[in-house]
Length: 264
Length: 269
Ligand SMILES: Nc1ncnc2c1ncn2[C@@H]1O[C@H](COP(=O)(O)OP(=O)(O)O)[C@@H](O)[C@H]1O
Ligand SMILES: [Mg+2]
Image (tube, rainbow over all chains, first blue to last red):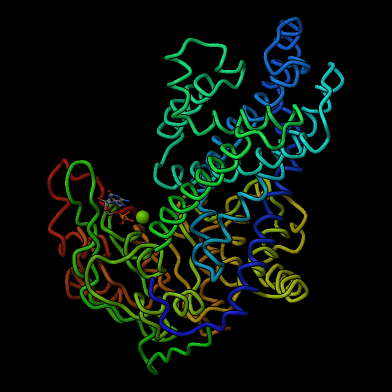
């Protein structure tokens, strides 16, 4: 771990940046080769949009003057980010079995770049999918201010960075998909239900609402709902930003540690 | 970055008491229990032992993938623990599973490898063409690696390991799973690489015929320790009576195993 010889900072930095771009490019091409998979990730939120969204149109879920779509679509965006990012580690598990991970780790490539390049690819994919989802939602009847929608994409991006990092950290620790999938399932489904991704938690009984406050995702979804309502100065927005940053910081630190440990 | 490690005129790899203990749910597993060895420049060293002897674990330590829990080693003159970057620059590694993505083309894998070794785009493309030419992959450059035969795959794995012209090449069970023709071709290729570039080759195998045919010198490991070393002929003479005896006889004499019926073929011939 101790770098025995001083490396000029500028060359270390440019090496890190070009390695990150290299890894990003490799996995972006991999995604482009399997475009079908990209649509597959969109399937679940699209189904909710098509078959669940219309049930809500008569209900008042958010502040007055907002439509039910302005409550539902933020939840579906974060649901997309949650499930999309949490399963990212699957890719590295398979690559571990092919020996690709070790092949790269015996080269001088920057260790953080191996991770960051992948996470950036995942973020780009999920933001792109978010765009498609919002376009479909607009076709269904969503009306929301453009800045609010863009803020929603930023939240999806930060959530992806956090959860994809955690997912990679887990995938580096376990050796088979059979160990990986149950853990991810055990985290994602309760997160979705307890954060009020489908319906605002404020609708529920007090105990459920209270319980949901321990879920970081709850603050993110409330913030995106405020953004979609055009209420950019709501307290929910501040709480959402803080929760998102805290989640990302903790995840990246944990993941960095896992990567250093396995990367000797 | 510009560390220079000097390997001696003779020794390219030295290990002293190199050891690795894994912690598992069922307690500690002493995979490698103190290995001392020296590999000379330009030598093809056969690291021979039955499955589970600790060959892969030793290789993963020598390639910086795994931190030793005991002992020390230098590879290409660089210390494993204090200068892993130097070790990575001076050595190439071909794992038993290879290391290519089946959905990626041969050309893309070769170029990516060059870029991982920090070559510029143009230099990586040139190096890819050169390696493809040397290893007979030129006609396969646009194929996905999934479409390659076992022997072709192995040649690609070798090309990836040779990208940065390493002093030392580590090969883990290079011919396991290949048909006899491809095995012989791969042996020939390894000899040619050594002859043309003076590359030191450290290869593990559990095939006695491979060790016999390819290695200048053998280090025999069993249960994480070195149990014998020498040229194939010397080992046969010393442990099986004559240089015409089989290495199998020598191995059995050394390890004292294989006589009990439950010891089914520790090594393949
Ligand atoms: N990551 C690990 N965790 C626990 N035990 C391991 C691990 N890797 C290898 N071993 C054990 O170490 C021993 C040596 O394994 P290995 O080096 O793969 O042997 P070989 O390559 O000679 O077949 C075996 O008993 C194996 O089960
Ligand atoms: Mg092995």
